[in-house]
Image: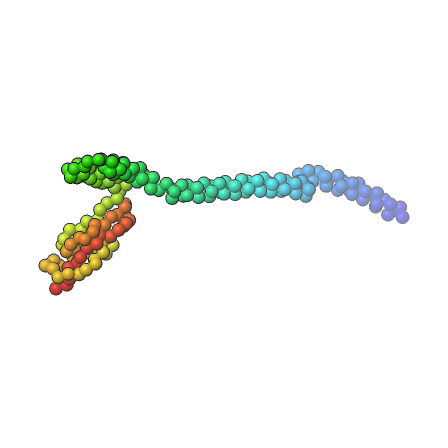
Length: 181
């Protein structure tokens, strides 16, 4: 029995040494609780960053919608500003008590100049093909095909000019086209 007691006593210093060594090794590696709290802190930080990014994205989307809405609402503002003097001129012409043919003609010519300037300022361009020009279905609308000396599928006469704004057709030129011979 003494042998067993000696062995147990001999094992006690080893057990104590192992117990003492465990905390020393534990200080080198964080405990599970410390790792959990660090991970939770990092999660909270990431969640905060995510929520801020989400709010920023929502603000950008909302501002973009507002900008598009304003662009639609005020898209013709420049054109409207250019048209106001034309209206003023027409109203002034109607106020003249004893107009003469010359004064009416002069007033119409001046108003047409204002209108032409407004069109140019807003990139509104006439589509006015010349007789003999090739028929372009993207800019011209042929309402009749007539026998002509011109080559087939060419413009013979312009019945109404068309208009384009920038590169977009607002109204095609209405034309008659040459019939094939």
